[in-house]
Length: 240
Image 1 (spheres, rainbow, N blue to C red):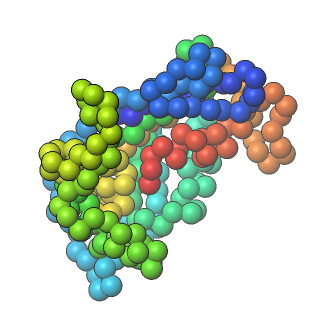
Image 2: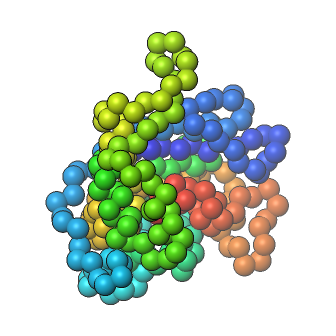
């Protein structure tokens, strides 16, 4: 499970900032942990002429759908805010999949505006390349796939663990041959069933802050835009 914490930056409020694995004190903090999803049991779905993955019949070709799973006792206002953010993404993204997200609105630690996480699975680099090629629907998609390495593993520019000197890691070990793929992405390219019930992500916003849940008349001074933050920041961590 990747976990993101968003902290208010006092000098630029209400702007948000974060970084990976670093703590700037009164600035942004981003903490990440991971939990692997259960291996998918499904095979790759049938492929239509032209390479597009056939949409699962039980999703009725309606494009991206969110199954929001609210915590017990969560306010209807916060649930509606998360749903409004989800609807914004559903109107844009066309992959015929169901993304399951646990949501909550409760008190968090001091200075933490919200936190979000995503579930991942390991897939062979070659399997991801094949799935991306099968799912390519535009010239841009095809160009991106053609730009991927032809080999069965990746070469990584990194640093030597002992000396700290830069080096190329191309020894074909696990970190060269396996990618950690978000389960929502895996669904989108056919490496996981489109309506798999595994939780794909979680989002919690802190009830300690003042939120404006209605964007139609502007955002109240001193309040945070609940729908805007939901759609623009934590939901994007699902990496669909």
